[in-house]
Image (cartoon, rainbow, N blue to C red):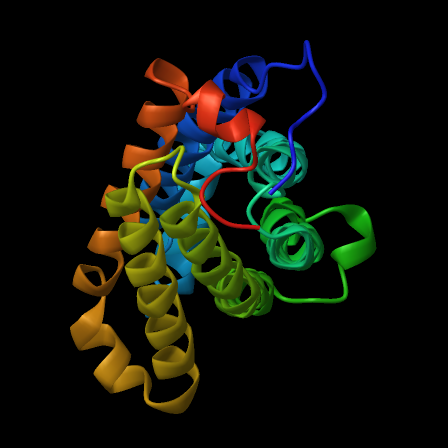
Length: 240
C-alpha cells in the first residue's frame, strides 16, 4: 500500500467520468430506440421509407453514438486513473478492453451509416434496383448489430474487471462492484446467445441487459454526485 502524490485529487476525474458515463447511457438508449423504430428487418422497403422520412433523426442518433465512442475512450483513461491504486495491471486490462470495444464499434458504425448511403440511391448505385438497395441497407444494419454484439464481448470483460476493482477498492461502494460484475456476465450471455442461438437470445433480450443498465447508471450517478473516498484513494484503498 503506497501513499498517492500529495495535492492530487481524484474527484475531478470521478466527476468528469460520471458525467461522460451519463451521456453514454442516455445516448445509448436513445440511439437503440431510434434503430428499433426505424428498422423493420422483415420489410426492407418499410425500413427504407422510415429512414428517409426520419433522416435527421437517423443522422442525429448516428452522430450521438460517434461522440459516445470518443467519450468511452476518455472514460477508459479516467477509470484507469481512479482504479489503478487497487491493481494497476487489472485496471490497465479494463481500459484496454473498453478501448477494444470502442474500436470495434467504430468500425461497425461504417455499416450503420452505409444504410443511409444505399437508401439515398446515389448515381454510382444506378446499377442496382431499388429493392436490391433496400435489401442491402437492411443487411448493413444487421452487420452493425453483429458488430455491436462482438464489441460487447470486450465490454463484458471490461465490466468484470471493473467490478473486481471497485469491489476491492474500499473507496467506492462494493455494491457497485457487484453490479458491474453482474453486468459483465449479462453482456457475455447476450452476445454469445445471439451468435450461438438467436431464437434463445430473442427470449432473453432485453431483460438480460436490464442489470447492466442499473449497474452502469448507478456507477455514473455515484461518480457524478459522490465521487470517491479521497482519503482511502490517497493511500491506495484497501488492497494493492
